[in-house]
Length: 126
Image 1: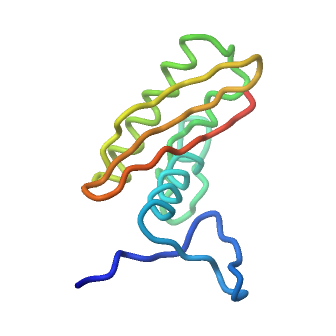
Image 2: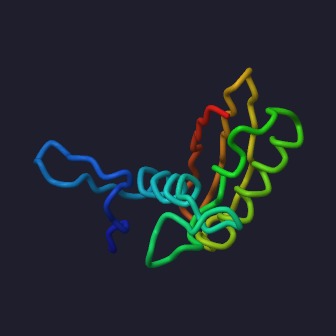
């Protein structure tokens, strides 16, 4: 019987053994989705956050300081869909739910792999 894949969780944090925390299945999938969505990828206005892979990320930061309306919500959905399809091809996007409240935009993302399903919340002040 094979073990579930295990890897470091992002953002890095310490576990109870004073080592970097690692996770499997749900924790790992949520970590991977957050890493893709919250990393600044290269845009016409920025060079990207990771020098070794400048295009990696979703570009959600491009939506900052924009009017929090239905157009912004739809752009957020498109950015999430495109980034997950490109950077996590083994993950199927089930749903992106956008909740808007004044200056806060919350994305509730449901994703699934062949064996794991998870809901990830991404909060941003816009």
